[in-house]
Length: 305
Image 1 (cartoon, one colour):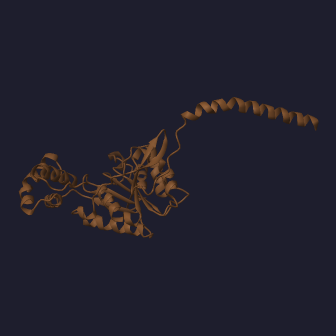
Image 2: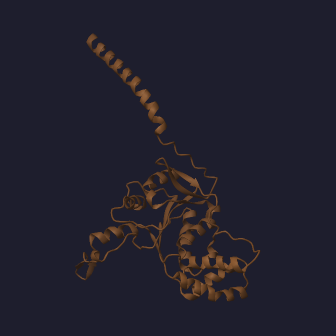
Image 3: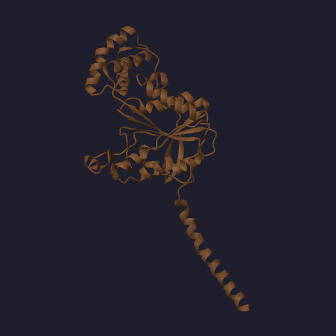
């Protein structure tokens, strides 16, 4: 018994010695550690960006969100109606889907999400913008907002992946691939120019097999489809024809205070502008309207988008 007590006493002395040696080392390492993430000020903004500082993530309030509204978005009525209904269900606490918006560039995909924020922010909707490289932090973001009374859309703009991209699997897990379900106050809205979010190659089609009268895609194609199909609502956007493009130009010129005569006079310039840009998109229409109104309209109220 006495021998056991002596061994235990010796062990305690050894531990104390180790602690004395480790404490100075901790004092040296502590300044090098990343600072604790600041707690979000939920009352300071309706939109946030996920940012990294010394490998620690935090939510940065967006002090000036885009001032675009649903009525500003022209000639995408079907897409607008469907995502508006989904978002309204979400804000009201009803079942709603994650949304993937794909298609032509500059056709209003990201603008639509910004407009939804302005529409439903008074009802508690908030948007968190996450860049593709930070998607690995999605579990941390979801945990941060879990239990909050607000309804959060995690917004991933211009999303695409390369083969073997680690963020690909991180997004799959949050969407519908984890043993833990996502909280009911979080949805993911993503935009992409690719329907399946990844490049598609001709040789992958050669992996397809015929089983009876059915075509079964190969493993590479199945892997790509497995992510996009986790979005319950797909919305496709298409290039605008000339009439739709001019309608959008007219809307924006009117928002800058131009009258009907001025808008009619601007049509030829608007078409030439689109020809030089090689696109008749909503973004090009907005850019032309700013340029034309800035050079032809004097002393009109400024509009912030």
